Length: 364
Image 1 (tube, rainbow, N blue to C red):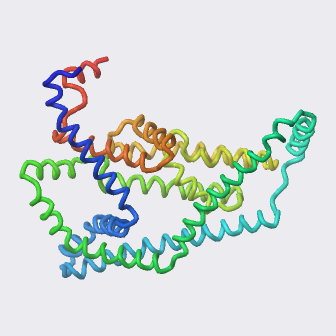
Image 2 (cartoon, helix red, strand yellow):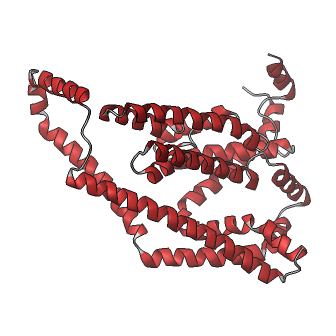
Image 3 (tube, rainbow, N blue to C red):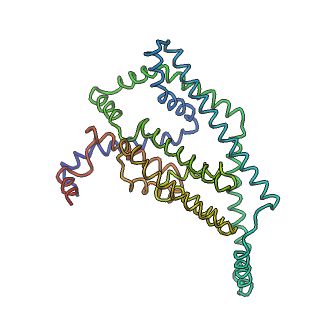
């Protein structure tokens, strides 16, 4: 049991945990409704340095500088999304067309002989148990396929809903402009809702934050972009089919610790081995090593100065997310740790361990 003094010391930590959990649950429940407002707020926060530059250096009117900065940012963002989406859709459509026509490469002769031997071996086994449960297996497969098709139909329904997409873009653009123009009013209003001590803690946490702010986001975006470019170059050199789509998946997988690009490059190398493309398989493994090496060298320089969360936190978040089958769990754990590190650094929240025990732990 904890001592009374420890309970009093950890009371702010408990209140922070409960408040963060409630806010996160509210955000998840209203995500699709507040998505354009959230995107607009992120864009508005990102373009604030540009707006200040136009206001102070070029002496533009604040509304004009806000309109120019947000318009340029939204234009670049929309152009990037359209370009990436069009390229990914084109390659995916080409792959599905090849699958429908059966125009897929054959396995190499050694692999074909091995698979033939496996098939002959299975034919000699007693498959009565499999035949008896054939209907149940077919029902399970059909149910799984139905679930996958339902998910795909829902996603395609949203993506192909032109009025919804146009409304999303319009509301996001308007929200970004108004948030960016009145950012100082929003900050003043939020500051007025808090006491002087709480406002000081929030301001100090925002300035000394080690990962919850813009620097962390930009650092990880840059690392992801570097991984995407490396994957594109490697796949183009090796003449692997669908390099653009595979590079996008690789960049997304690079967020995961330990696994990273290997989650894509390792199965792809095995597939090339089955096709008899030994040089491509070796090239993919070497490329995987190069991407991992660049990530290991670049990440400490770009992120270590802004993020002080233990790598075990990321691994635990990924594990919890996989067990729960939800990406929201990963976002919850990472956000909780990032904000706690920020508030603990400026003294707004206590450490989990008392100072004496913390010192002993470091000595060990």
